[in-house]
Length: 281
Image 1 (cartoon, rainbow, N blue to C red):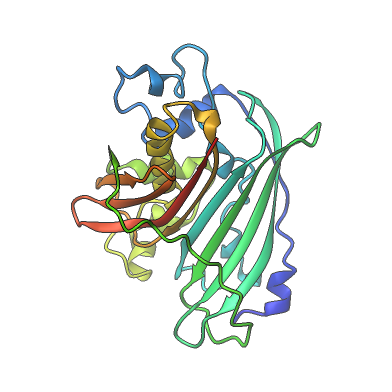
Image 2 (image 1 turned 120 degrees about the horizontal axis):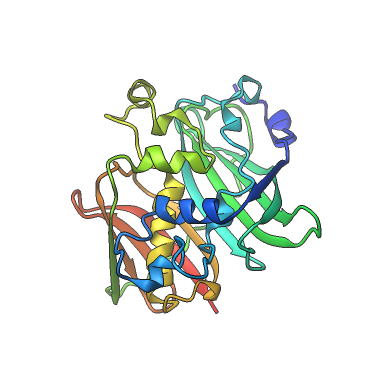
């Protein structure tokens, strides 16, 4: 069972990571950039000409790994899922360097017995030498098996409301059956995305795609459309994961001119990312 005070003060080790063109290109490929090998706007993210880091790369750099799998967290690690994710980009990443990622718990909400709990965390990604703050990432994890531990009932993060009008822009990406096997090498080693037995214990028919992979796909849709292919224009991105994605599904991102977006599985006609909002410069 969760010990509120202990988990709030849990020391998640700082991660120091060196990266370069290979890591930049791999991340872009792992979120489906480059599926059209004739599109020069995509090819620059994967190594054609002057390589450019994709703007949501900070989501995976300095990642602490599956620390919630540590027994001393008190969390039911099999039944948790990624609930929400946000990123604020403070400065563009260079194509190579060494960074540090420091993640901390910023809040825990007890939804009640049988209703789970919400765990809020934040990561600062900085240059390991100069200390330049590149990005702040925000994450909500839904602890499905951990409600009723006597913790606070709020505050709960408020989700962005999408416009009532129909979206004006649509962008589709076909995920690959093995995409989760690729994406996990960005640093997310949760076995839910790899091991069929673990997935079954969690209530899924097969391993599911990482939420951050689906969000990267949505971010690519936003950059390709609202940003006109210019990655430096994307400054913030926030969204809620509303359903799981099975590798191999087609993801359609529906976008409004104000930066609102949602992503749905075409095959199931289910919204898998909702309440999305991108801040564009």
